[in-house]
Length: 425
Image 1 (spheres, helix red, strand yellow):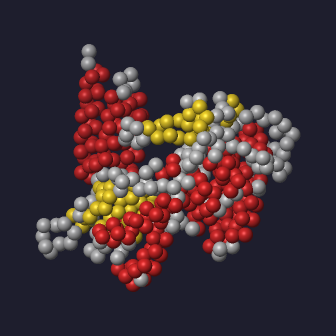
Image 2 (cartoon, one colour):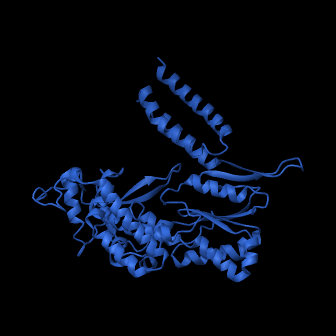
């Protein structure tokens, strides 16, 4: 690993600034934010010429470049180099990087470095593409200009990879949709097969409102896997800073265009009665409806066509239509309406941790304890606490008392056996 040399930085100054720590970050953030708000307003007004002009202004601005460098040098992956082995660990290197971002003419991204990481709670692994620091910063710079456009055109019930939105917000949205007695009772559980790996590059270049030449260079940069350079013909790499925004840009319209299609085909009055709603978090989504036939004959075929244009498809094995009384899993929770025995009581929607999520969590805890033979008690506690606390906090808004109690018992006995084994003579 090498740190970018700070050649000529001492003599170079940007807007009169010679030291990274002398930058007025409050002013920088405020100025960039004002430009982003102007981009969002122009997007809502449909003034795409002004959008393009403001985007170019932001991506070539000193303040925009400073924020981009700051983002990639303060996030969790700041010490992970790309294929060039370069990191920006010193104030001089960071300021030098700001200058490098100004040289966008002739910019050519380097191939991604592919690493394989385990999927949460599963044995299989998923690929992660690691760009170089310069490419990360360039993506962060263009993301500042793209995100206001994507946010302004996002579906109302889209919650993944968006500022100030979370899985908990998606859960609350579904609770409000499904808890009333007049709520829809049929659910299409949408699962997109290999979403990030299969998005059509041509569709992205035609439809994502940013510099198309730069976008195409990123998409076609290639990837180095096990020392072999491979071409990238489709998809956007998981690991790129701009990838989540590109994913949202790809799926935006799933909700609004579906409702528009049904209103045109069935009429506005009937479209309201069929109770079709779409809640999405990244590439996971559910669609509600009043009848199973509507989901099978109208909604699912339309969704398949919507995805096909973008190069992706529903998973036949995992996509299913379920009644609310049977329940369905979404974002690690199980949503189900329980019918009471008494005819005088209404069915009640309960949201609980899903069985798959609970099993994956316990498996992770078990593996930590099992692999802790050489650890001290304090070290084991240090490894377990973040996992236990994070999982409990995630599920704290839902009906989880029984699940917590069961897991508390299981974890206790795992630790008891560990303690007996470690203290055995």
